Image (cartoon, rainbow, N blue to C red; front, side):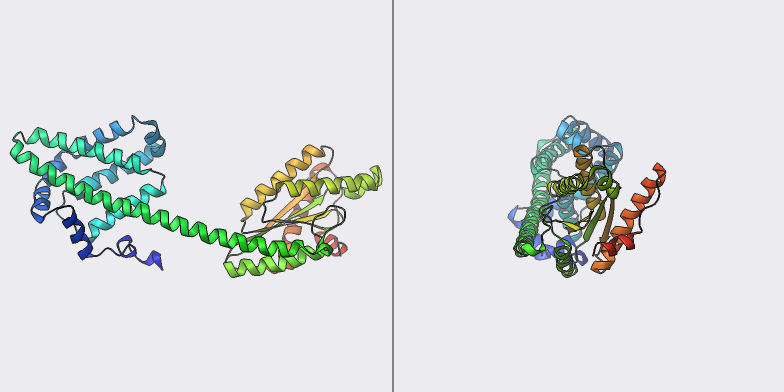
Length: 365
């Protein structure tokens, strides 16, 4: 597994490669020793160097936005102290290289663009050189120091950018795999769409037969890919009362409206179904409970806008990735959650409880 390896190992950088990179930059051992000889001087100036660095950096809004808050600033200051001290430590081995690779990884993850990183390097170099100029008046002494430090900065930059590039390549590969998986899912879905016998004639959604076929297929796919599968269960509140009071035509109108709301709000990979009567489901592949709740809320909001005098009850259930429920168990769990929602609403309104979840599901066929 990649997580068992250091960045150094993942990018196949060994001692020979480190030496070769230094050769390419004409960075000699004498120059590294010269840099290391300045460690005590830099340690005595470190607080002023870090303070000057962040005073300059936070003058730019885009950098301040990335930093965000005082706690992040505190951590960044500590990391910057460590980075500078390591530059003058005298140890430029695999551990040093790994720390530079990690800087690149962290900067990429938190959204620091290369232009901001290079701007920071230029600022730090300027502050370090200004500090050294105060201590070394003789150009014959100062110039070799500055040349050596400049080479070491380039050495660090090459490592940081290697991580940036490696991360981008990994993201492209990951996106390619997701696209292939999505294309496969669309192909599977297209096969299902071809069977008109699995469609509800009133709403155009999948009927119970179609829903169960999809549930089996999507559950197997989730288990194969180790992804989540969620289910939304929806019921129209007091639907019998609607039919008795306003007539079956009005009841059908409400069901069609709910079907439209579901179709409008689900994702392209989801499956909206009518289980039977006034009960509906949405099958959501590769979707967690929180994501399903958001979709359910959007359906409820649109339904409420279109039908202000009527309401729905919703239950959401999720299965995977450690353990998977059967199709029936997932449906039953979502149904029971919906029933608890409905019962709570009825009790608050002082109405009599409706049928139990098991009774209603059995009646749906």
